[in-house]
Image (cartoon, rainbow, N blue to C red):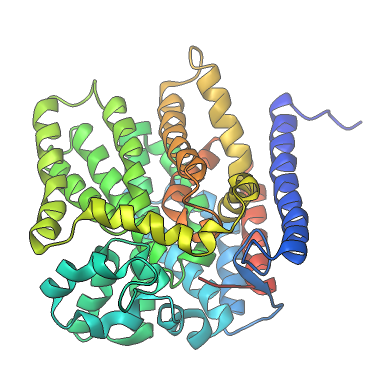
Length: 447
């Protein structure tokens, strides 16, 4: 006789079905809107992608990494020494991200990503005089201005473009090096999240989350996307703050502030990571002995990058004001808010996977029953909820209509630890791997 599933199992299933239904409805409604009105400006809604079933040189490696992580990841996450686990997680995440990127081949999947007309490498020649370009940056944001910046350059503070300018200056020129930078740095986000979760919620939950951070479907977009690099910078800002507030060293707060300041000059929308930082401060308020010093170092560190850019002549607030104008001049002003405000969440399901949908349900249950839930689980659920709130604010703002599968990578990294609440990790890891492999082999994702 078959035993009836436990209530938690049924609730997980309902969450997964709801998430899958959201994606399906977004596909069907999006297909209708695009065919009938041509207002979505994506070829395979809700994703910015084209239908293109294919295999490539990365396919065998992707299958091997997926199979190895499913088979051995949960066991190794428990048994490896902590530092060994961090190294193994980063290495496995690198292998997973590289293999998925190379499914599309070297040129199409890596080297050509950041050299397309709207991307950062196309304007490196205009930064021959960096201070002068920064002073003049806001004069080229709005469409119709002299020599307007391409979409991605206009849509971000100059810290994003300047990263690739500096890579070029030190000899790491071209799309190959730029793609390698994004993959290598972006993959380190999984390590940053593990460090933060261990500091705030304990090692057991961090170890349980590790395989899910490695095998995230988000790796499809971390591969050679500048947003993967942004995600890592934001993640390390949160991780260093977590180390500071849990007594490792208050000096880490200065590093956290410095990276948060840089985050704000990589992407305007990532200022919302202040909510994740606030959550860390709340979780650490009883554990840090020198709280005023932590706050002082955090603020001082956070002021460095804005001060440098302001002295160089770039006005962040003016840049954001002009970006809003540019956004509504382009497809952002045509894309229907009524569709994207919920279809964006379908994109989030794709980058975080169905396992995360079940994990978020469990995180919500922990917060609802916090009087009886273990303290480490409450702390992890609170951290995840703070990031989810930031994502929802970004969604409601109307400044993120479409392409959120890459734009929201920084937020997605902090939803994945909710998978630590799930039983039978191999089953859920298999679902994550299958989703990523299907997306990468059936669609050609673009930016």
